[in-house]
Length: 314
Image (cartoon, rainbow, N blue to C red):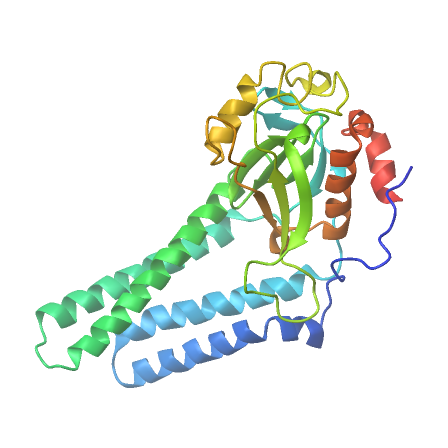
């Protein structure tokens, strides 16, 4: 049967026009501010400042244009095999926004330009100038250096996503969930799921009434078989027999240590965080699906089949 529609969806649909502009207002102010600084630096002949500031302003403007181009359409769930730690498995995919190699390269190039300008400024004013005012320029160069590192890191993440064999998304299989996106790849078994929630980072909230910015999946501590699951839940999809963690818990032990849990199982693994900004699917559907299949192991065998698509389309 179809998943029930929540009476009050957690996330409102994407909007165009003023509502979208309201959400992007800080980015618009930042782009205008950077452009103004670039023009002022060029007028004063400070081209080492003007070049990276202009590049950062263009980058902020491109990000705004990309948001307007996304529109209100969401990608429906689709069946697509995914590569897991134990081989390819049938899965139902909730899509993330695709990343082009060109955009990733542009972002990485922006980071390189900013880094080179910051290093050149630091070298010039540290070695060739002695007046006290050079310390203000050095502080500005240090700020540019930090920004350049962050932008370059983001560009590398985008390139890694664009060059991956699998399209980005959240893949639900019979035994596990695979999250493949700009933040890397995470894989966890259904039986390890303790809770699924929609949250904001501590002390932060998105601008406008758009809903929380994160879907957070918290995992159980410990390594033994999860009680209450179907006896063949894991083995049906290639996982260990006897449940998602296996009869002896060996596989879960390795995953828990990798995710930040202790070898004795007393610490919970690091939560799996899915930023909503990366999703091109309906985040309400993804949240409902994660909660449903975590709570109803008997329905998991339909994942990767048309029966799952029918449930999501209801």
